[in-house]
Length: 145
Image (tube, rainbow, N blue to C red; front, top):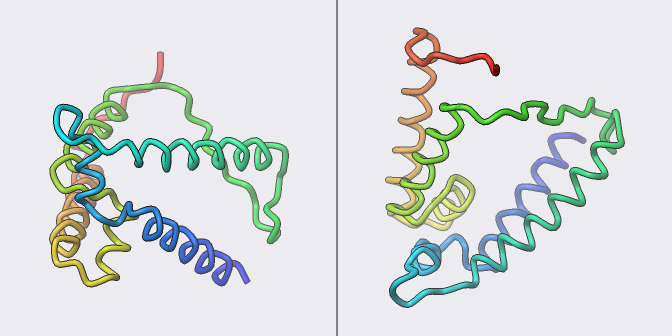
């Protein structure tokens, strides 16, 4: 049942990305083009997502188990460190260059978008590189002060 619920949630998320136009990199790049033909529609999509997320996390924070009976595992980290800032910068740069982030990239790949294939392969390569460096201990973690 958990796998079915995850599949259903993924399908609804993907459908929402398609309907809102967020699987189209031109739409995302139009939002990021503040000096040109700025398209504010992504701000409304993000605002709606943040609103739904706030309600969802508020409700989830009051529970110890999910509706399907699984243990709730909510994030506990509250500090901002170099790794978080660096990762955010890399994410933003990649988003600005490609016009995709992971969710819309996978949806566009499923729609047969050739640019999405390049993005997803680069994303997987980056994830693999991170994992390799993490295992070797090349990436240092700092404990919060």
